[in-house]
Image (cartoon, rainbow, N blue to C red; front, side, top):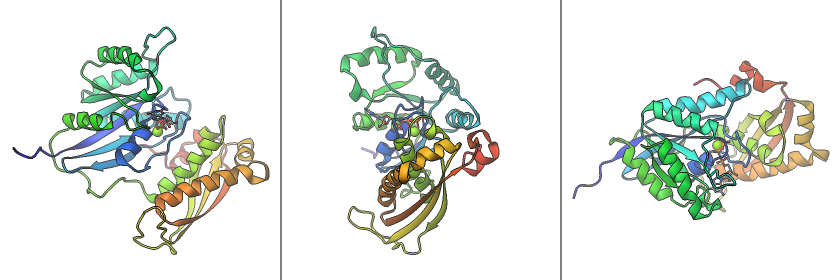
Length: 317
Ligand SMILES: Nc1nc2c(ncn2[C@@H]2O[C@H](COP(=O)(O)OP(=O)(O)OP(=O)(O)O)[C@@H](O)[C@H]2O)c(=O)[nH]1
Ligand SMILES: [Mg+2]
């Protein structure tokens, strides 16, 4: 028997905010490439994660959650997500179970908008129903039924990204819709993101996790210094093996003085908590000790100002 033909392609993860797209990307790749939080609108940019196996290579493109945008930052995010659909080989549409109290399933307005967009793109689509660990099995059937009618050409996979259930089957389903072809990216490449971009995101993640209300939506992080002169090159990234020291200075930008006060906290307690949690995550990423110093600055209404959006890396694609 012949060996199976090698397949490859780019797959966009698309869906509403908070359904678990970034959790799923990290699960596929086995590394934390994208930050995750319980708050919607966590991801703001596209994040590429490459999975290379002997028989296939899939480059996943995580995207911001599609929502009704308010203001330029959110418009950028939604465009980033929807335009990805046109640029990939297949779409992995991620939803989470939403069942009304009378046990009926309704496709919400935004989800319906994604369904239409995906249909008009006329490319292979796979639907992942995520977070199945949260619902009793019998409740899955009406969801599957509803989406089978809405997207008759999509194969449907119930999964749990956080527990890892159904991931192998989903990968096989994706492979089946990708064209035969050689790897598109080097096989040891996991992402196109620079380390310092991931570091900025890991700091933003801790602001999201520690602060409430409007602070998460008004936060951006910029890396000011990234000094690797005391880092040991090629240090093995393993628990317990630490390769030297990386000194990082970063600024957390918010939009108002009141938000700055929240992020710093009484006696700088909040900023210390954010810094300590971010440092742990960054040390894991870099496999090195990390010295992290954080500043908090106000950049008024930055999320509404196109010039500043660009400076923070939220550019047009
Ligand atoms: N119970 C459960 N929770 C999950 C699962 N997958 C993700 N979550 C949680 O759902 C929340 C949102 O996850 P994210 O991965 O940030 O969601 P996202 O779709 O990337 O969100 P945006 O970036 O805002 O669009 C987090 O609290 C995750 O831990 C799952 O399979 N089961
Ligand atoms: Mg995300």
